Image (cartoon, rainbow, N blue to C red; front, side, top):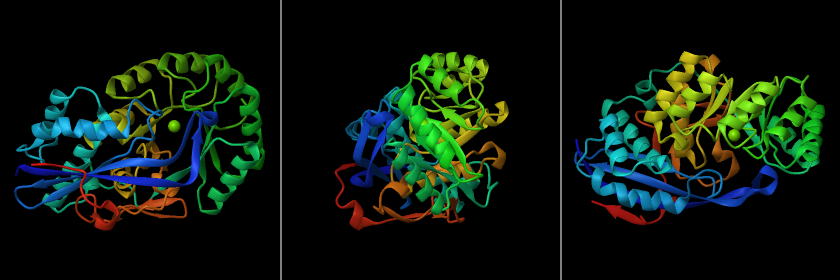
Length: 367
Ligand code: MG
């Protein structure tokens, strides 16, 4: 089987509500998603998606996805999409780095492999270990009152784990955190995610001010070393997210015992093939994961859920679903969300059917 054509689509995903992280540092009203359809000489095709969270969340941006795909496409044409290792090798040789570009291609090739084998992608990623997955809400940075209202809304929708975004300074963040702790529904789990906005001293001050609460803190500071500094001076469980770009970052974090969990975002590490390796290493090291994607529509959410479905339950914390933040439907099928949980059936591949009306015309075609 050979890749015969890549079709590239661009879809705007207007957010239902403007979303801000880190005290307004990352403020977006819409996301720009790129959807890739890979066709083969045998009539099978696969679907992938890459949707950076704007241009300032990670070293990734939407125009970069499409420019990177233009660079990669000539190298991919004629390759066997069923050989994921070879596909990744070709991409890594043709374009070092840029994992957020490669994720869409890798995802589409897993979809082709599943359709070819008549198996769901989760079966190919190790086999189903869960019937449903726990989802977490994402509470954007706002006033304490607004954040409490958003947390209660998420609870009413069935979410029991909430990732509350902080990171704008010690007094303001303590005010948010104390309000959320006071108002949370008994039994709900809270994570305070600074998205790397704190200096180590700020993180230590905030975390030690609420040291008696059983909550998680996520990516307090920019680098692994800064997070390690915080680790040494605090007691709450830490989750690393944006500083885990690949396997070597995870190995270092594990060697230092920095974190009890990581955010395993598929696009940030370059696709399902690489994410699977990180997943397996986390299991070996006793590290929990929030398996999810950086952003996007049903396609990206569904791909991440396939990996989570094939991961032992007690290594999973909660997954975030990007689709909760917008109402654009790019594909039918795939992940089904209800009352803060996600399910996937056993439809072959990713289990998705594209919605051509949403996609419009291809913005690029390589053949
Ligand atoms: Mg995070």
